[in-house]
Amino acid sequence: MELEFYRRNSLFRFIDIDRNNVIESPTDLPNINTNHEVYDDEDLQLSPSLSSSPHTTTMLTLMPPPSPESPWILSPHQTPSPSLLYHCIASLYRREGSISSIAVSKQQGVVFTGSESTRVRVWRQPDHIEYGCLNATSGEVRAIATHGNMLFTSHKDHKIRMWNFSVTDHNFKSKKVSSLPKTSSFPLFSRFTNTKQQHKECISCLAYYQTDGLLYTGSHDRTVKAWRLTTNHCVDSFVAHEDNVNAMVVNQDDGCVFTCSSDGSVKLWRRVFRENSHTLTMTLKSQFPNSNYPVNAIALNTSSNSCFLYSGSSDGTISFWEKEKLTHRFNHGGFLQGHHFSVLCLVAIEKLIFSGSEDTTIRVWRREEGGCFHECLAVLEGHRGPVRCLAACVEIEKVVKGFLVYSASLDQTLKVWRVKVSPEEGMGLNCYIDRSFSRNNGMECDTRTVLSPSWVERKLLQR
Image 1 (cartoon, helix red, strand yellow):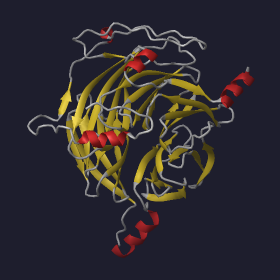
Image 2 (cartoon, rainbow, N blue to C red):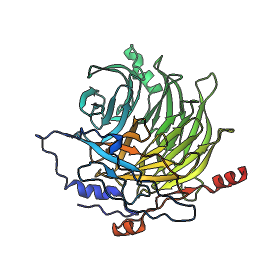
Image 3 (cartoon, one colour):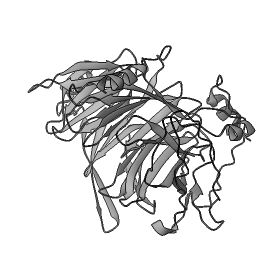
Image 4 (cartoon, rainbow, N blue to C red):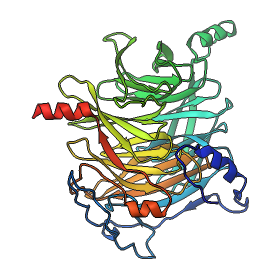
């Protein structure tokens, strides 16, 4: 059953209709579908990037498709750049409900997934064979974060579990270290301790700051808490937003904490010098009218000479802010549009931004070197439900960059994508889809960068 897309209708309506027609996987078949073939960089069929000018709409010149034997897929025709190849190398299905969180430990070579069950599944890179699982009797796993050999998970009981894990000789071992808040050794005082430090509603996001050993937790109770792992105590708790805290990220360079909420705002917090308390530094909002939509996801992209913050909203747009080098303020640069429904998750790695949406697709964006212009390199299609969470890591450090992208959907599948991107040869001021293609498919949506007027004015004054 094909899904028809309309801007004014929620995709969940179609998912409910389609769910009745889904054929369950037979129990006697393996639940992992992988491709173990290895491809060298010489096998990539890359075509040159399309040239464009700020005043000219670039129409896509269709390139010859790869050979039938190749599993690589050329960047879809509705995207403006054919300089990206991708391939779905694994599709994992579990009858444990939809996956709600993904974390990748590139150092240890494992991937963790949390779902509506009480288990945290562990998958091995790069063949994505299941190592096993971490069992917890505390309900649904809402969020996951990892650092080194430490794993942090949040659960339905509004607590956080800390795990130690190791990978040796293709064997995975794990042990639960502690719970946050830590249960008192005296039963009479344990209830008082939990009431004081514990979140009142589900913990929706986790972020770890390596320098100070602080774990940040955001919750639907509108608060953010900071936990010092050396003592397992909550050192600060503050009301961050007027509605649910949906996502957060920490800048590992300076310790700034970014949070986003259903109240439509993104906030920047700094820890007071030599104290545990945090203070609000900036409230970031889109400068475009009627744009106070819930913000579902944020991602931070830092390098030696730039810092960009991205946020995904329920209107299907991705706003971005650029950090000034002198004042360290974040100025709204504009937004990316292309998704048809809510943006639910974001990942920023190198100069690429991956966005997952309620429209069941994943878009791959690339930022121009030294500028704010972005182009949509590809649209990854394959899920039959909204893409709820994403994770990515670098696989190949060569002229042709290679990435592994993990996506989980409400269709209860985890997909693994191998993405290879050729070096950029120049990007235009705007990127558009092929109009003739969009009309033939009953779908029309600009894929372009819309710059903020204030950002353009500042750049002109700097000249």
